[in-house]
Length: 372
Image 1 (cartoon, rainbow, N blue to C red):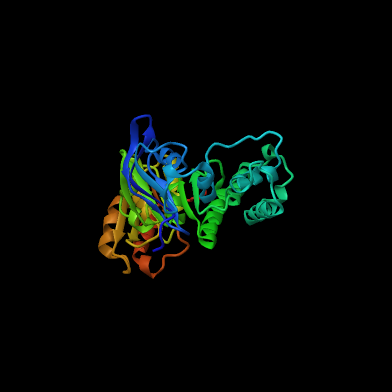
Image 2 (image 1 turned 60 degrees about the vertical axis):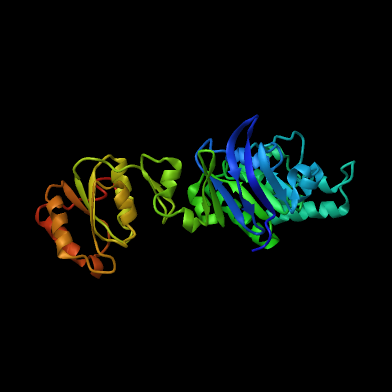
């Protein structure tokens, strides 16, 4: 492993004399994304502001490129690290090119004049993040997604070894969140930049991070790879989730299941039942689901939302015993909804449920119920 661009030793951060986080030991490696996650108020922004040298550490030390941060001058720090903050600047009467060019100040003389080489770096940074065509537009007249890319270009103009970002996706829609984080990962790898950022979107943190630092109760609660962090019910425990679930396999959040006896039996499988489960849940209709193999795509959502779920062994055809248990519940339901176009060999035994529903007039029309 390469030497870290930044690391901390028993760092405590906060405002005044009151630490928000204590005894933090963390590292930022070249080409890797380290993501801070944790509940509101856990100290993510406070930690980032301390690493940016906006707040002094209350205890411990921060080392940047082998030097203690507190002993470095601001210009030296700015040549090594750059930040993209949550607060959106509103520079009046400034064109986008001028906003990005402000990132060159650590490398210019006392008058802040740009050389031709500086202008080339500004141009290259804007082209790299896809905003060069905005160069003559007023900064106040571009979209949030464009602004975030522009601020990233400004940070890249500093030619940093470390990039710090505080909730960079907060103001972005789905497309621009994915575009921005994909670009960030590409830049980290291609340029060897160490990245530390905070995210509220757990699903994105799971998919774009190399390592995660989980903050809670004034300390690092856990750190590790996404595979280590997103295991079992740890995300729910980290955030104190009491209503609903977070599925670590798919990075999806589901509301709490409906109580009461099932009114509808959903015969799903292979992902076909998921939209129906969610639609019934939205309508407040308790339902049963099954019989599903333990490895079926439907199962995580069914377990999260259904009043009853019937399962059988993975990689085996559904057995008669599980179907008999499901039939006992179906006999007390108002109807059955068939989701897959056909019951394959693994779900063949579920035909007994379908036949029972047909014989007793329980087959329901999804369109009549306004279901997908």
